[in-house]
Length: 270
Image 1 (cartoon, helix red, strand yellow):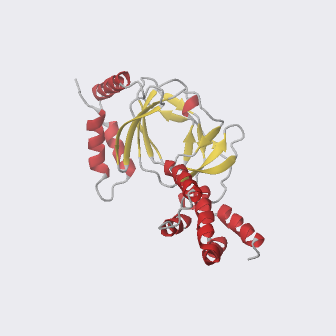
Image 2: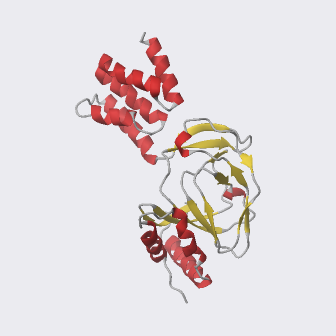
Image 3: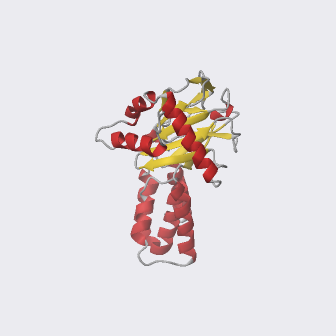
């Protein structure tokens, strides 16, 4: 019987993905070649993992192998969603249904463009159900569609491999109306950066912070992080910050930042 572990599978996948010119979905044949014995072995190792670590049993996504460009996890369908919204995935993913029954998953088309996430998208469109055959990999490109695993046809374990994030932000949509709600940060670092900036401002930190603030202002982080950096930068530099503020107000790709800065500059009489 196979003794395949998640570490061994992850190592095989990582050796492929780190080769120059490799597309993430080039990993799919590895999943297709997994035998039933391999899958039983993986599920057995997963069972050992969750029974020996009670800290992860409340998580719906349990990561079992991670390297740059590759993240391997197990998750389950039918776990009730904690929000009334859909979030467009910012990663390429390969999903395999590990149950013996074909899985049917509601699917919504979003077709977001990673280079145009600043633009408000159209409402989601319901597509034909996503079919996940037993033990066969299905490729899900980032930002193309949203599978509603919470309302799948039955409860099933899923083996998932996904890429690094393709963008720092994504969009969330209302589950009922399917309309876009707002653009949100897909980077957990964003909220931590904001917190540190707020802390530094309260501590009146000035020395050595200006280059970092300018870097954040000109970055592709979400509007909240960049706005916090803009306020801090202006507070430190005063009128000498105006050229950069005008540049952002006139040329920035993010309409949210542009509108806010244009309004602020108008109130300042600039």
